Image (tube, rainbow, N blue to C red; front, top):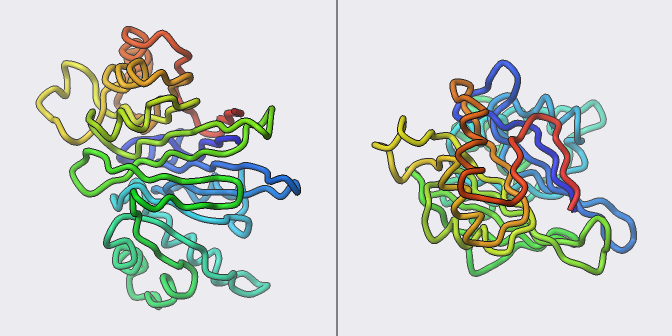
Amino acid sequence: MRLVVLGCAGSFPSAASACSAYLVQADDEAGRTWTVLLDLGNGALGPLQRYGDVAALDAIGLSHLHSDHVADMAVLSVARRYRPSGPLPALPVWGPTGTAARLVELAGDDDPAASTDGQFDVHTWDPAAPVVVGPMTLTPVAMTHSVPCFGVRVTGPSEGAADRSVTVAYTGDTDAGAGLDALATDADLLLAEAAFHEGRDDAFRGIHLTARRAGEAAARGGTRHLVLTHLPAWNDPAATEAEARAVYDGLTTLAAPGDRFYL
């Protein structure tokens, strides 16, 4: 299984990165590549076309409905509907309650029914009902954020040994809590948001993680690789990395657009 970072900026695109969007891919026994897109925030359709293919997506998982995680779903619909070769079939999309209405809202007056019924087959996350996409299983986990939000554990075959399962865990947006700990437990890679800084943002809880809190969860859960993402342009990357390293001894990486991780 492999992870491709399309965008890792937090809350708004930076000069160097689109907002949150990630591809998770795995090959089945026949050699067919299956692709899941996790979130598609502002500006992320561009790098999706650089590192992936809008026609090759097998499913989309949306953590929550804030614009920096879903805004480019509107233009993805346009790219899929108006291809010279004709529109693509409806793509399965999983998200929190209200996802279909949010996609209509994003589409505005541009044939909103087509944006949902024509291109996206929308389903609601159910933590008791994991989603199977080819060789991958997506298990949603309720997180702690200002709106309903789901992290996702994606389990599939290892890139180096197909008979061994590996897990990528993605937090979406969250603060520390039971959901984060569930995601981090025995994860091969924890893709954790780290929008806040210790000291600066202590008054705001229940919204975002600091890198320290992400690192503490990774340490508690035995995570093997911590990748910090959702990084606002005004944050000091060195300070973010230092917060995590102070409490987590495992491999720590700051996400960057175009990064590829092989598990």
